[in-house]
Every structure is written in structure tokens, then in C-alpha cells.
Image 1 (cartoon, helix red, strand yellow):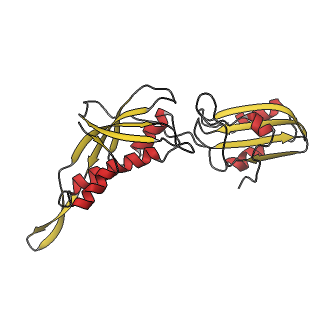
Image 2 (spheres, helix red, strand yellow; image 1 turned 90 degrees about the horizontal axis):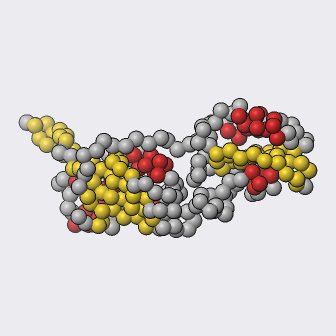
Image 3 (cartoon, helix red, strand yellow; image 1 turned 90 degrees about the vertical axis):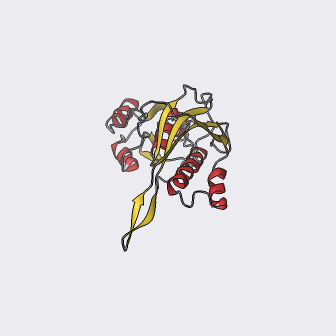
Length: 248
């Protein structure tokens, strides 16, 4: 087994010319390099979200994921399939013919924290492919279309906590969307704040309602981090108008 520094391995193929006549192998290493960059470039930390992100890549399957907390390294066995075509002559006509697939497995490990929220280290190690069925993952939780407008339209005209809860319930959001609603006193008087989050690492939406007005917005960035390692998106932040700005 070898530990690979990717995408350097893919780059070495191009520099040495290895794989020029084996397009499936070149495709295999290119996909492995892309896998590394995918894990380095995401803020997602939940295993379900990371698995879904990986399997969106064509020719990449997740065979197993190690149990972990958010603070532990993410470990998964991934199967990569490289495909390719070559030009061949059939009589006087040039055609394309598929070459045999190149299939291999890696243990992908993503760990550490880099500014602002990314994995600091990602490595791939070649392993024997286990005889298991690829895993399936749910898509990330997402706000529905026109979320800003829908929330603004459904909010009551006064800071009634029960009415605000009913308004959010009518939005029929994905059950994984985290919802926090609370009330407090601000410079506008009694205020109800709403914080909605697309899962632990997704987008955040704030709204607040006071007597005679309401506003919906998305903060530029959610800070600080909670003890669980997830970015915070709280009703308190909404009540106090944290990073309040126009919705669009």
C-alpha cells in the first residue's frame, strides 16, 4: 500500500507522459486528485454531507465510513473508476473504442482545521477494495426556492412568539433545517428572533419581528463556533440584529 500526495500524483502523470496511451488510467488518477481537492475545498464536517459530496463525482463511490464525532478525522474507503476511449481504424474509418476500466480503492482521511473552516490535511492511501455495496447518502438540507420572500410574507405584524412559530411551521421546511425561535428586548422593544440553518454547516437565515416591522436577512458569516464544532446560528443573534443587512 502506498500513501499518495494528491493531486501531485496526477500531475506527475502529466509531466512524465505516463498514461498518455492509457486514458482510463489517466482518468483514474485525475478523479483521485479531484477527490482530494473536493475534501480540501468544503466546509462540511458531517459524515453524511461529506459522503454525499464525494459521491456526486462521476466514477467515485463510497464503500465505508468510519464512525466519528465532528472533531474526529473523516475516514472513508472510496472506490474510483477510470474510463477512457482511444481512436482506432476500422478499415478506412477512424472510430472511438472504449478501453478497459481502471478501478482502485483509497482510504481517504481528512483532518485538522484550516482558516476559515476547511480541513487542513487530506490524504489518500491505496487499499484493497472491499467486497461491499456502495453507500447512499442524502442530499444536503437546503432552503426551498424564494425562502426570503416566503418567510417575509408569512411573518406576523407583531412580536407574538406563538404566531411566529406557526408562521415558520407553515413553511414546511426540510426536517434537517435547524430552527431556533426566541424573544427578547432590544432597542425596538419586544422582539422575536428566528434563526434557520441548513444543517450544522449550511447557510444561515435570520429574521426578527418587532411591533410595526420585521426583517429577513442572511449574515455574511456565522461566528463564533459552538463547543460541538459547528458554526452557530442563533435566535439571540437574530434578536439583536447580528450582521443585519438586505436580504439580497
